[in-house]
Structures are given as structure tokens and as C-alpha cells.
Length: 362
Image (tube, rainbow, N blue to C red; front, side, top):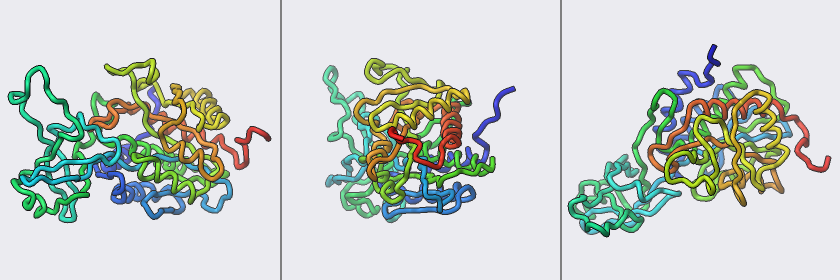
């Protein structure tokens, strides 16, 4: 008999709504409200901070504090320059990929609402054969159907408006979730599902649990840095995405050997606390949860680093979700991996005690 799915019909409905909503870096509040509304039945209270990180808290009066965390923002663009004939040049807001931009539809966010546009590109017939210029940050541009700068500005578009892609959620072959911004709103979804399971299974934790959805990860882990200083946790388990390296043009000698469907990825890095990671590995083995390993060298490049090096040091670990086509509009993950990340975080929390069990010098 097949194992019962962790992801329910109602949680899948939430995931679709949450992914389809735009939450560019610096403008995450609408997505945070969707996330908080879903999480509300499963927590005791909420914390929010000045820049919009949101935290659902279970056992808020407990002295010992454990964080499970994802980040809520997505990559985007800013309007940087409007030409006299009404074309728009952009700069990045996060790690936006200029090579995927040509021919993509966009939403320009203004005070008047969404203005539609497209990233234009010269037709193949007009490009110099043999020495075609590739898409670069300085030559991609947006056309919103206007013929002058004044016409663009009349729509409400100005320098500083943020721009997102409208691509929405879909499921491929029954078990692949595809959307823009799976990096890392899928993390927010997974930690919310952990909270739901704890509530539904009536688990009582011996510590305060802080289900944390941080902002501004895509521009330098800033939201995690701020919220960690607010919470002052003892332990943090972070979830983010990592690269599936089984697709063409990726060098496994450099990026490692990781694949969709083979389970959560447990990170090895200086910021990852060895004893906490060992607890997670042991939890996976005991519960027969498939997992993979990744060495990330000097830093993880995730909010793990922000938590680990805050407040004099927080025992931190990283559980990643294998993902194809990162920072494109067709980011792809395997449903089984999503469920196994949820299960691994959930089971690991049940192993953590209300004491300083992650001291090397007990």
C-alpha cells in the first residue's frame, strides 16, 4: 500500500495561490499575508518585523527557542531608465537572469496597478549572422506598447517600479511542481506544513518553535539577519533550494551529484553545526527518509549563514530541496522531495531536547 501523501488538497490550493502571488524582494507583504492566513490555525501567535519577515510561534513563553525557516522573496527587476521613445531599461533586484528575459511577458507594479509589458528582442531575420549579440543586462529592454516616455509615465510607470514575471504554477507528469519563485516560497510552504502536522498530530514540543518566513534573502540574507536578532534562537533549521545537477551543461565535479526525486539534501559547511546535522542525518536514517549530501565550501549562500553567525552563534543546519532551472520562470521540484523535506524537518524537531544539547564541550 502506498504511503499517505503529506500534501493535502487544501494545502496544494494554498501552495498554488502562494506561488502565483508576486513577492519581489522588498515587496513581500502581500505574500506574507497569504502565508500567515494559512498558518494561523496552527500557531499560538505571530511576530512581524519592520521589513516584513513573518514568524508563527508555538509555545511563545518557552525560554529555549528553535527556528525552522524559509525565505519569501523572489527575484525581479527595477525600472532603471525610460527612453524618449518609450522603451524601458532595467536593473536587477536579486539574481535575475538576463539570458531568459527576451520574449518574456512582465508585470510592472505601479500605484495604478499592474502594467503589462514584454521584453522585446530583434527578430532572427535582422540579426548579424555569425556574430549575433547575446542578451546582456545592458541590451534587454521592456516594451509596454507606448511610443514616448510621457506615454509610459501616464500609465504610472517610473524609475524604481518593480517588475515580475507572471508565469504561474503547474504540475508536470503528475509529480513535478513548476513555477517561478519556487526558490524559495516552497520553503515557506514546507515549514507551514510542518506546523500543520504538529497541530494535527497533537505533538507537544518542549521548546518554543518559531516558523520563520524571512524577507530579502535574494539580495544578501538581510531578512534572516534582522529576524534572527529579534528572535535570538538557540537552534535554527533552514530550508532552501539547491541545484539538481543531472540536466545538461552542469559540471558535477564542481556542483556535486544531486537529483530530483532522490530526497532532501543535507548540507556540509562551516556554518552547519556538526551535532545538529548529525541529528538530522540520524533522523533520516531511522525514519527511512531518502536523502542526499552536499558540500558547500566556505558558505552555504543561504539564510543558514545569517542565523549561524548571529547572536554569538546559533546551532544551525540546512536541509535543501533539489531544484532544476533556478532563477528562471520554470523552476522545477519533485513532489516526493517536497514531502520528504517536510517529514525530515518534522521528525528532526521531535528529536530536539529543551537544553544545550548542541554544545561541543558538555
